[in-house]
Structure formats: C-alpha cells, structure tokens
Length: 130
Image 1 (cartoon, rainbow, N blue to C red):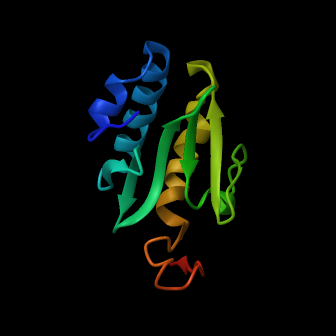
Image 2: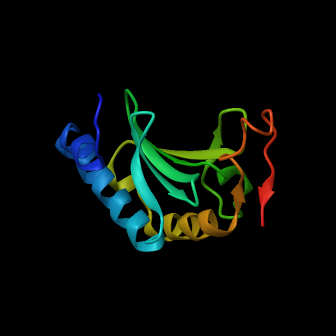
C-alpha cells in the first residue's frame, strides 16, 4: 500500500483496520496537537521538532502502533521493536486499544525521546533528549 497522505492511507484500509487507525489518529492528534503528522516510509508518523515520536502501520495480521522511544517508557504493555529504543503494540481488533495506557504512552512520548533525527549524523548512536 502506498499513500501520499494519512487520509489516503486510511482510505486504503479495510473497514476494521480503518476503525483502529481512526482511533489511534484521534488519540495522537489530541495528545500531541503540535506534532506534525505525515506519511514517512509509507506509514503515518508524527514528529516533534523533526524527531519521529509515534506512528502506525498495517502488517499482515494486525496494525502495529510504534513509539520510537517506547522501550524507555514506564507504562507497561509495549514490546521491543528493532535494534534501537522503539516499543510497539500489535493490534488485531479495536478492543485491543485501551485508552488508559495509550494516553500514558502518548504523554511519555512527549517527555521521553531519543534523538532519531540525528542518528545518521551521530553514526548510529542515539542520545537521549532532555
């Protein structure tokens, strides 16, 4: 699936996946109104000061919600994703989206950030932003 806008990404989803993504998008926009949401590497991602914070993608059997700094969050429920500091939640149905941890993760996403924006310049080293 290739989309140029978040609206186009959502339009290409099944009704069930679109419902999940609509809930996630609304939660992100409410919690991070100053974040810039755009399609990045074919998926909706929100940035604060050019640093990726949160995004989601459609996988074969689920929607993956990813927080780039999620491994550093105190709120439990995210699993390790990749080789850096990302944490994810795999969502198979809307009932898997729980408001309380989602709100907590989004709050933590604002205050707990690793510097992905400069990872290439820093030769793969991630620094914690303060």
